[in-house]
Figure 1 (cartoon, one colour):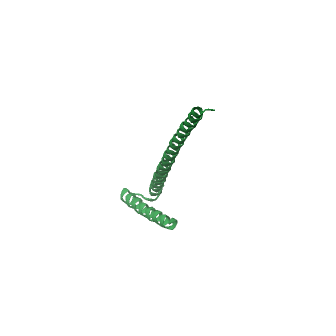
Figure 2: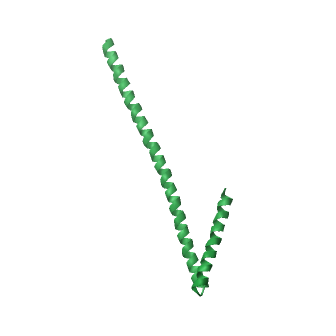
Length: 98
């Protein structure tokens, strides 16, 4: 083998190694972006779950109030009071989780 041929092989290998390094770095960047997207989507899911829970609580409160209250004034007052109790319960649960 001549020195020129060996030099060309080394340069060819070096070029391929550079390409592999670039592909690896690009793959790492895509992986990091995917992890960030997963984290963002998990946060969205948590927010949506909280909204669903809130809507379910509102629906349950409305059903309870409709079965208990007779007039509109006491119905609204009862609904507000139940909401207040639920918020306090949620705060207590959050505090206990910490």
